[in-house]
Length: 586
DNA sequence: GCCGTTTTCGGCCCGACTGTTTTCAGTCG
Image (tube, rainbow, N blue to C red; front, side, top):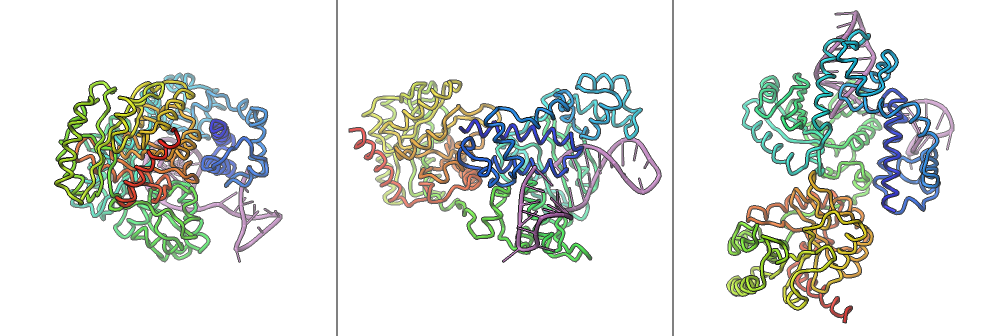
């Protein structure tokens, strides 16, 4: 059923794309209507297939006409209007809009005047210098298009994973901070919203002297090509194909600018509508009176939100997924502060083949972070190279017990292990050996390409095992590299409730697993999560800073995350988890 | 095409930069 929702999303995407061409502008009201409907469907919960036409119109942005098309699609598999649009706008023509610099107007003109209906035809026309002859086009446009097509061929519109983008953004902001002209610098855009992948990197700088800053970027060693070079805005691409947009504003405009360049388009539109309702104007420089231009607020995001009758909304929530409405009635999710995490439950030491810090260092580092409980979870033996044999684990247990004696009451050490879920859902060692641990998580590390039914079955089997407290990185994805295993998420969430098996929120940037989508789907359910660092080195304990952002983005309630609980409550719960299973299976 | 404590029509967010213009349209974010 989740697939049907995905199909409807595809349908609406195509409607939007073709309507953009048909209307001649991405700002056309019809186009925006489809865009709104698209978001309404994306954020809905429940089974779209069983929804009536009138139920569909209750979704945000979905009116009578779109509801009818969705029903038409769900029952017949086709939509009359879409078929007509497809006929009018063949795939080759649609493909042309992928070229940066070619919008609907230009595509229509090329088609009408030169009969260009495919990328090949466009290349040919460019080679023959046919395009510069058209009114409104010229030699420079030809060159720009040629270059854009080249780039498209080299991997095109690939998005960059957060694991790659974030360090780069931090580096650039740090470098900007050293420039004498820079007063403040902050990365914004989808990266600040903590999206898993980003299309481009937006950086906002406060300065009274933009020219040297823009020059700094244009001449930066990472830069491959300059797309735009002005005093207020400069855009470049890096050698790896990531676009960077740098905006410079005055210091007193910084809040307005970071607000403007952080919110999703839809979030910003809602804010501007609120401004309009009050007779004001909101742009990247200020919130000001529409006539006369007297500034209401501009220096900080807080002041602007406040003037619009809203509390400051955490950046990761600014998607127009209901956060503005929730902010209004005072029910925004609160999020989790780092010091509200009382323990880490997925940590490796150098006993695991890929661990790099000693047990002593890990315990010390956890203590420094104020934790009152910590689970040491080496890889179990079935994982080649990294896995640990029984004897070594028993030795470690003795060491941990000795350390516990010295630690006294300051911190509780749990001896755990990260089990491997094989293709059939079987786990390492034997049942008795597994049950002797204080804490077991079970994770998929192999066989990522099995069909959905088998993947789901292996996870469900592991969840039902009496030794298992938690499933680690459920989908086993690495963002931007490997898609997650295919799963029936509803079946997994059902099992999590039934077996009281926790799901991990793995804070590592390449993983961020479970995903925001799964977190949101679990929101109305009684599922317990545990946030972990999956640290293989003491420094990686700090990955929790990403986990809390990710969890907030998924609207996860603090009390659903078990390691925000007190030590006594957590330990009691983890024991209870297993006792229940033992009883249920006896 | 959607929507409504200014409802059933008439609105619907805003600005920078570029290229080709000679005052602005198109594209992008």
